[in-house]
Image (tube, rainbow, N blue to C red; front, side, top):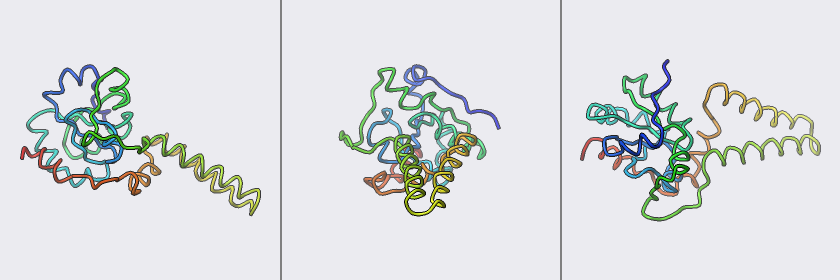
Length: 191
């Protein structure tokens, strides 16, 4: 499988008027700050959106974004497997903001949801510490929890996926309001 095409933030900004931007982050992350005009289609909803993304791709180029570029690369691969060729934003919205480009907040408000990578680090670290502590106090078998998390992190790096992020994205605090997927799909259709 080919690596998806990438645009750096400067290229993407200069072409923003001709791109359809799809942000595959969780709604809470999207609400915290997104590229102007980006449509929020969370990664776990991508399959539902395939027909509309395919239609939009016939009209012009699709740019897929996330916080760092990892989830958007995975989304681009999924879309390519379905005959939809897209590009990803190198470094994601983090690189976009680092270059001084504006991020828009949903409804003009700022939320307090942490970025997904920060949530994963907190959860993984907490489970490792919990496993080690319970392994000392309760039973040594609890150390297997720490080993399992470590193994999951290694698998995550090798496959460039993150099961923990997929689980965390479904938690209520990452969905402060229902993702307005139907509105995003309507905009993809040109409605």
